[in-house]
Length: 114
Length: 118
Image (tube, rainbow over the protein chains, first blue to last red):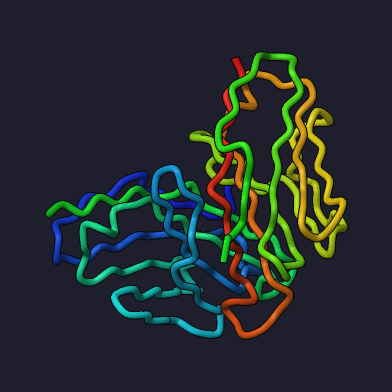
């Protein structure tokens, strides 16, 4: 049973518009969340993270929002660029990640069209 | 900075053969993770080591899978005998010993080994 779910396998957005990628989780004990980006034939690379004590974290064009009551987080990319086209994985961890184990969603493939 | 190094990048083998995947973590990192990515199951953790000691191997699918970390700079994931359903991309990741969040939590992934078992 998946503890981290990304229900949209794919998303297509026009360049310059906002991309919103969603992630739901079932374990209320998760206290740290990360987003990874993956290009074809490469390993995932860390993008942005958020602790459960916050509800928003921003880094340039990327913002992650956390709604603990809904067990939902989202990644906003504004403005979207063609280079953002990749698969985005949501991940969650316990104990601030100190136990090492990350639980990943299945990913959402983002396509940004020029 | 070489990053996490995995070899081989591609492996094609026949059912029943032994397969060994290799990983060199980033120097100074003390945690190492092996993941498997498939279309059906996404990215799933197989096993992770902390200071060369296996901490959690509950994700290892069967006894056919084994992993070792003989020293801080090398790990192997072995499948013996291999089966077609083992076909997947296998990733190795490493993480540093601590410091400012989020770098403490960030895992650095290698490029992966694409395994095809015929």
